[in-house]
Each structure stands twice: as C-alpha cells, then as structure tokens.
Length: 384
Image (cartoon, rainbow, N blue to C red; front, side, top):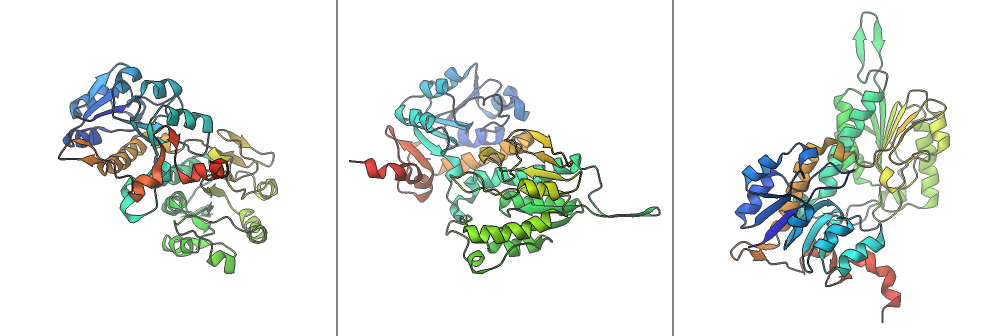
C-alpha cells in the first residue's frame, strides 16, 4: 500500500496541501494517508475533519514522513523534513525551482524524486493540475478587495440627490489568470477598468470582461507570446514605447494592480518612481510580483508603504495564502489530479511514466541529481 504524508507548513504559509475531500479520494485509490497534527489549522480544517475522512493523525513531521512513499507540501520542505524522507520518496510541492539552488541540490542528493508544481505545462490535459492558475485566480481577486478596502473613496459610480460620485479607475498590468480575475472583480465592484499585457491574445480576453485594452500594438506586440502561452521578454525599444504610454495612463488611475512575472527571471519593472510621483494622493498600487522583486520601482517586498505624495504600495508575498481556505482546497485538488496519473489503481502502486510530458515538465530531481532542462542548461558546458 502507498503511504502518503502531509506535514504542517512553516510560519509564513497558512495553506495546507490536502483537504478532507482529497483524503477520501486518495483513500479510494488504496492509499494510507498520514497528516501531522495541526497541519490544517490555519486553513480552518481540524484534525478531526481529516480523521473522519480517513487520515491517520500523527504528532509531528517525523512521524508523518517515516516510511512515506509520497509527500505533499505547499512550499519546499525544510532541511529536517528532507532528512526524514527516504531515498525514492516522491515529493510534490511548489519548490521555487529558481531560488536557493543549494537547498534544491540537497533535495536531489537525498535521493528524493521531486516535482515542482509551478512548472506544470500549460496544456489542456494539465489544466486541473495547474497550481499557478488556481492560486493566481484567488490572488487577483484578493488584490482588488484589499485595494478597495484601503481606498478612501467609493468604487462604483453613485448618483444621489446630493450629487454624483464618480467611479474608481482601476488599471491592471498583466492579463494572465491573476490579471483577468482582478479585472472581473474590479468590474463587479463598479470600477472603470483598463488593462495591458504584451500578449496579443489578451486584448480579446480583456475586452470580454468589459475593460479597455491599453498597449502599443506594433509588429513586435503581435508576436509577443511563446508557444507555451507565456509572455516573451520584449525589446528595449518596445519597452520604451510601452512605458511612455503606460506612464501617461497611470497618472490618472486610482488603483493599479501589477501581475507581470516571467518564469525564472526577476519581475519586469513596469512602474517607475516617476510614475508613482505622478499619481494623486490616495491612489493604491498592489504589486503581485513582489516575490520576484516587484513590478514597481518603490516596492518593498512583504511591506506596505506610503510615498511622500500619498500613494500606498502593497507588496504581499503570499496573497493567495490570505484566502487560505479556498487556496488550500484548490491546491489539494491540483495535487490529487497530478498524482492520479502516477498511480496504478489495480496494483495500488506507483507507476510513473517518465516519458509523460506532464511528468517531464515538472520533474526537478531524480536518482540523486537535478534533471530539469531549465535548471541544467547552464551546466551543460561543464559536463564530461
């Protein structure tokens, strides 16, 4: 029988990698499920709820990990948990593959078969496993709600006997999953919404949500999307033209939500200090790229700051975790869908197809070494 283990996350991570719903489904696949006591507390899931679903509750991480075949985490496990896992253990988590290389190598050297969920291929078959989409969707929603809560004016237009209250103007930079949800949420709150993105396909998506698209639509723009659906890095010339357009537009906005991230690179700088200085007092910027340094020049990751001209910049590092109940439930379903393709239901055993494009796309470490092409390409010149 396969033993699956889940441990509690660190202090800054309220999410949990399993839910009572997915416990039941893992049990139906013939697995034994062990969960560290208190692992779901910050997502408002009690040990009793997990136990009722069929999980064994154990007192600490070491007890959960002992002899486990599969370990599910939200974040990369700490060193003591890595040491407690046996060689060949399958680990699935958001492993931050482009950060802390030494920590990643320690996971590989321990003989752990590690999968980075944030590298999930953007293909139809993997949609139910796409953790970036499930978590970014909530992040986009929460960004607008947080901005609206701090904004000291009304969001929708209000017509009263005493006069008309104008609607808030919201500008969303980056129309991926987080951006599209931010647009939809701001529209539901009654704001006038504009948005920008370097991907041509985003224009139609933005318009479908009732927002106006803002971009320099030249030839480079029309070719600015990878086959995988991600934004390409744009030329310096295009960046200058787009920056000039954005600078003019930002000056008149009440709320700006930035969401631009490029896998494996620092967040692109979209809002300069001069742009912030052009905004009126009381304006809000929510920088959802803070974990990679931020899209705004004045962003301080993990902090909320107010500039001399009265603009407030929010830079949350784990905004999806602030909606932990929903974020955990969705993430747990992503993991269930991912693991299901690796299980032989008839034999009740792991049966990983190493040639499966989903497996190949997410596999970080196997047989004692780091194997993902995006993490080994810089080492190729030194290989014998």
